Length: 250
Image 1 (cartoon, one colour):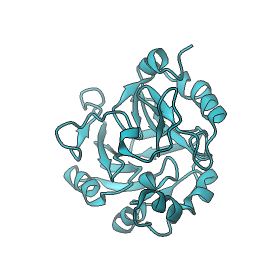
Image 2: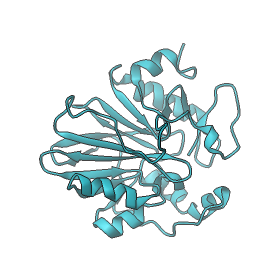
Image 3: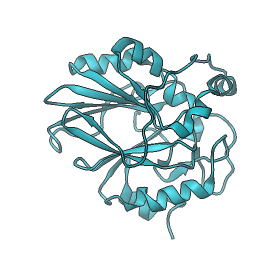
């Protein structure tokens, strides 16, 4: 749900907690984060959704038109507009962690597409706290979210000819995961890693020690040219964060 400012304890719930987004002209603008010239099989659109501008990813196979949607926190009609534009069929709804800004629109998307919702089981308890999370933010609670299956470390999720490897990266929450597409060198990082920051760890299920182990033991083992789409704010690369992220340098 939040990132940490280096040297500060962040407890105020505000959009100013996030890095400055890349969506300068229109906060709801669809941004093509991975050029089809780099990978002609992948359609990847990133849409910042909801009051906290969670980065929702729509990832589709250009050939089969099968797709997964990652972190549909809100603004489902805008998400579906992308799906329809590219004539995609949503096969999976993947949640990186059970914070309301990432999961709040999942049931609506499920009802409209029939796609199953996937979440790591270590966040099931946190998922039952959505009403509490909504009260923190002054939002309406989304109601119960039905999870069809848990996704665990080392599993592979296939969408058409695209494959994402699940990395269990606890720390921001117990069940936080990242999705790594090795052929495309693309990481959907949830709220584990941000441009020049990391996920906050002072909310229920958070642990600074665990997130640092996840970052150094899993995330930073990826190639430097891996493109990272954080849960909020601008994209980055593993190499940039290895060299310039104040939490990871040294």
